[in-house]
Length: 227
Image 1 (tube, rainbow, N blue to C red):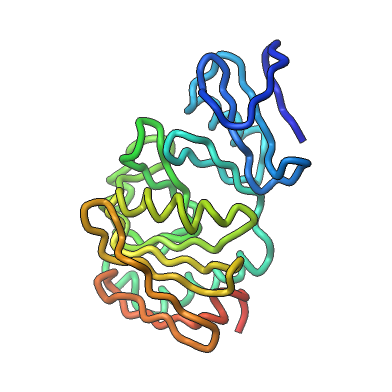
Image 2: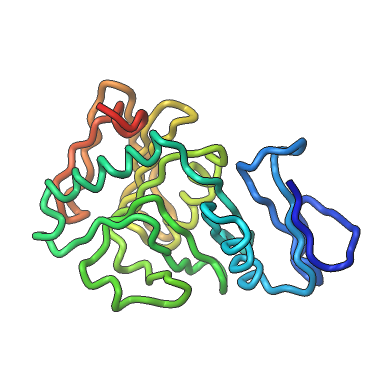
């Protein structure tokens, strides 16, 4: 699958954005494991907007100055998110002045156009007052973000560890289905998280109470999307 606008015949995997935009659509398989999307004379932000329109159901993010596109999630992925929303509600998120939301953009300090769209976020109830642009909100309203890995799992386990720490997100939880474990990053210092706490099947993740609610989450349910 390749998409191209403009009259250039040059294709590059990676590389500079000017004068052509070249980006990787990760998780959409082809012979190179990625799709090159080229837009002629386009800005990074405009290219991301175009991809949102051209690839319905995909998630488009700009991380460290590069566009990343994630394919639509599978069923267990979505069941995990549904279970987490109920778990946060039962833990009293609304009473604590919080909201549990999915697909809400997080504006990042790592670049002029950078933003992420976490799978799930625990945010201040009045987060809508912190709108920056493009349906993305300032980092200070985010108490916790969670990602359930998909085919482009390295973004969640490497790139986003960096950008979420630099955004000073207090807690980052990863259901790493690739490696069959759950990682808990917390309390970033000087733009970096300490080493994560790793949880294996049969264990329970104790989410730091600093997020504002008390949460105990089954590793098996986080990974499988069902009890």
